[in-house]
Amino acid sequence: MIKSLRLKTFTCFDDQPFDFSPGINVIIGENGTGKTHLMKVMAASLRAVRDWQIGHNQDDVVLENALAATLMGYFKPDQLSRLARRSTGNATAEVSLKTSEGEVGYSFSKKGKNTTKLSKASFTERPQSIFLPSKEIFSIYPGLQKLMREREIALEDTYLHLAEELDSNELKEGPRFEVVKKLLNPIEKIVGAKAYKKDGKFYLNESKIGKLEAHLVAEGIRKIGSIMYLIATGSLGSKTVLFWDEPECNLNPKLSGMVCELLTMLAENGVQIFVATHDYLISQRLSLMAENQPGSTTRFFGLTKSKDGVKVQQADTLLGIEHNPILEEFAAYSDFELKTFTQHLPK
Image (cartoon, rainbow, N blue to C red; front, top):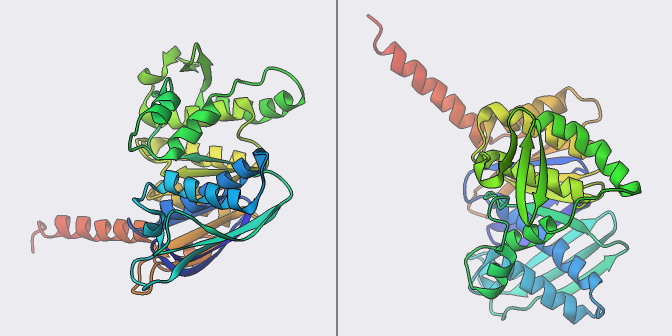
C-alpha cells in the first residue's frame, strides 16, 4: 500500500506532500491540475521497482534507468526534463514515494538527459499495481502488445502494461482460486455478467442476453469487464494498488452506483484504490458512504491551481474540500436554471 508521496517541481506541482488512505483515494480538480499526473508518477515508480526486482541485476544504476524509461513511457514527453515544472528556473524535480513495504526516492534535472538520480530504494516485497487509463482496451486487446512493441504509436505504456496483465489466464483451481471466487462472485452479480477470454479475444456473458463479443458491449462496461477479468486471473486482489482514471468515461450515470459498489468491494478485499474523477454522482456517493460508515478508509484530495503550482487539500469527506469544481458547477447550473425559468414569469 502507498502511504505517502512528495513531489517537488514535478509537472504542475511545486512542493506538495500527500498522505494516502489504504482504502479508496478520490482525486478531484479542474482539468490541468495534475490528477492523472499524480497517479501516473506513482504507477510508473511502482512499475520500475517491480521490473528492477524481477531482473537479475539489482544495481542502483539499473533502477535509475528503469525509472527514467517508465516515466518516459507513461508520460510520453520529448525528454524527461520536460516533466520538471516550467516556472522554477533550473530546479531539480524530486519524487519520494513510501509504501508499507519500502520506499523509493529519485530526482532528475531540467538540464539533464533522460536519466534519474536515485536517493533511496528499499523494498521487502515486490509491488503490484494496475493502471486503468480512461480509454478501454478490452475490445482492442488482440495484437495490441505486438503493435506497441513493433511500431511507434502514440499510446502510453499504461496501455501496454495493462495488456500484459490481461494476457494472463484465469485461475481454475487451488487456494488462490478460492480467494478469487469469493471476490469475483458478488461482483459478477452486481454487474450481471461474466468476463472471459477465448482464442485471444474477450467476451462478456450477460445473464439476460448471453455471449457478447467485446466490440458489441457498451464502451463504459468494457472497463468493468477488464477489472472482472483481472480479478479472475489473480492480478487484481489483496495488496494490489489500482489506479483508475475517469471511471465515468462513457458510462451512463445510472451505473455510478455500481462503480461505487465495485470500488468498495475491492477496497474491503485489500485493494488500495486511486480514482481520478470529474463525476458528481461517483464523488458524492463515495463521500456519503464515507460519512455514514464508521472507520471509513476513503480519503478525498482536492487539487487547485495557484501561482505557486497546484495546491492540494486532503479530507475524509467532500465536505472538507474547500474548492470542489464539480459541486461549484452544479450550483452554477442550478442558478442558471432558476434564472432561465423565473425570467419568463409574469411580473
